Length: 277
Image (tube, rainbow, N blue to C red; front, side, top):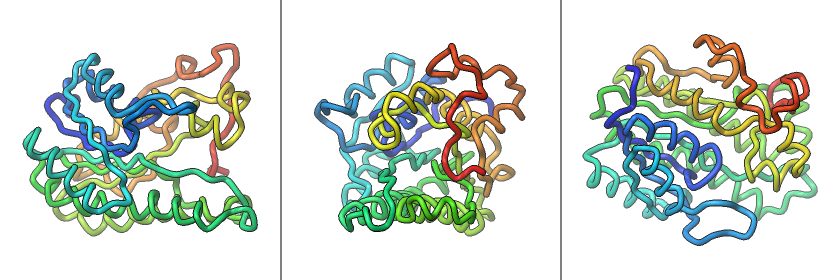
C-alpha cells in the first residue's frame, strides 16, 4: 500500500497535537477520520476541539466524524465505534493516541492523578482496541498503532515518575500481547514513540514550558512516521516499537530540519524524549 485513500481511521485524542497531525496526514490521501475526543468547547490553555479538528481534516481532503468520547467510558467507546462503522462502512485503522501525562514522583502523585493516567492510558488502549478488533478483522490491511515507548527497564525511568512510566509501559504491553494474539488473522499492532520531545500543549503544560517546546520537533514528524507504518503490509509489520526518526531514516529521509519548532537550532540541541537511553 502507498495510500490511505478511502481508509477509515478511528483516532483517540485527535482534537489536537499528534493525534490531529496523524489525522490531517491521512486526510491528504482522502481518508475518513473518526475524531474520538472529549473537547467540544474551546479550552483556555489547550487549542482545538473535535469540531475545529474536523474542519481542518476536511480542508485537507478527508472526511471527518466528530465524536464525543471519554476513553474511560465503555458505553461511549462502543457507541462511537458503532457510529463510525455506520457512517463509513467499517474501520481499517485504530490509533491509540489519547494519553494523560503527570510527571511527578511517588510522594507528589495524588491518587486521583494516578487513576486518571491508568484509566486513560492503558485501560483506554485496551478498551478501544477490544471494541475495534471485531471490525478490524473485516479490513483488508488492518492496523492498530499505539503511541507508547519501547519498554526500557532502566530504573532511571521509573525513579522520576513511576506512576506515569507504568501507565505508558502497560500501553506497550498491550501492543506486545495483542500483536501475538492477532498475528494469525493479520491485524498489525505496533507502537510509535518520538526520539525528541514533540512541541504540543501537553509538553508545554506538563514538562517544561516554552523552553522545552522550543527545543522540540513538531507533531508532523510523528504523523509522517505513523503514515509510513499504516501504509505497510499488516501481516509483515507487527510487534514493532518504532522510533520516529529511525523509521523515517530507514525510509530514506536524511534532512529533519523541517520538523524543528525552532529552525535556528540544530538536531544536537533538541531535547531527547523520555524512555530512550
